[in-house]
Image (cartoon, rainbow, N blue to C red; front, top):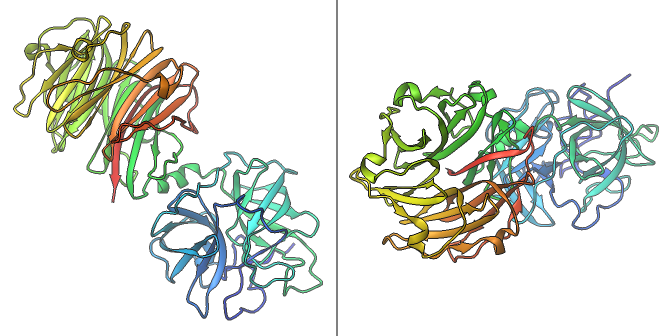
Length: 548
């Protein structure tokens, strides 16, 4: 049996009929449309038109936004000769995507796959107010109903101005591809190359590659076959998210303990989230993880993890997404007994780590050269508090602020730029409020102020306050009007682009995220998608990161 013909399409000077067939690949002459009905207005907003080349000899394809900065499409849309690979980097020809009817944005970078006809294309400026497509995590079963969308030609139109859709049935599923059969007269035509293949839930399962084109305009009338081949995307979540994490702007790196390991994901500048990936599979097995802290610094993310046997380990995720190997902190900073929690922040390029062990608060610093100081007992200067169960840190104006929970109360101290600690002070007394027993705390420094969130009464109540730069405190504010009625298992806060971002894992196994803006208003919490977690979310930590 012959492979279906490539359905890549016409240029503005009108290319001749079908290009030569290359098994497993789409032709190099991308196309323009699907022989099916017009797509309902507003239903497929993530689907875009792709144009490669100049005004007199351009070729068209279809693509799909996976987030505001990246379009997923067929690699063959960018090749000059069928079967050629696509080099990573800037496209050889000027390439643009079109949103709606008129807005165009240039593509600045291509990130191709080597095992299938697929490429991610980076936009010069992010798309505004368009959500990326939802992605399926499993291939469709044989016989499943699927929908394809594209801007290619139809039975009667050479260059349609509207997006079209078609109904298909899934056939055989291969390692990287799946076959399709068109329903009725629906067929993929030239120009539909790179368009999305969606399941009934509207999730992306594949990118359209090649087709027999039976019934398409300018195809031999004797050709009646409507079968097609699509490239699978359901198994590429980590690859897609790895590139999405490189998007420019402020991001929120997040670490969640789940099951016996730690999982890392990122909230992107457009507010979408990557999936969560197992840190131990990238940085080394430390025997399971029960708690963590994360600190964004100079584009990198520092991760501190408490292993299930009570060890403390450190690793760096570089800005390009690569990981180092977990290193034993005890081996360089001194061994601690009965380690229960860790928190960290940075002052400049120094990583300040505060650990709770044997009911005490201990502090160490990893400098910019990677050298660690020995753990020191904070009580030596700040005074003694016993039976500490939790702690939180914030960096403000070059100073380290620490809040610790002891006996159901929260105590605060500050390490100034000279390395001297102030005496512990009762937080609740300072804010002039009363609460039930405090069970957890988190902090974030915004400018010279330290924002603090505490949970009380076994996590059933949550409060927010600010220690101003002048040393005064605002009253505690009840977060129930913001979060609703939730029971918090773990809380974390971070200063992202000057604003407070706050997350909470709840007793009903959700993760909620909200932002407190500089005008003191809070966003309505959103539920974080937890794709990649093997079990319920536990301890959570977040930090800001920046990519130019």
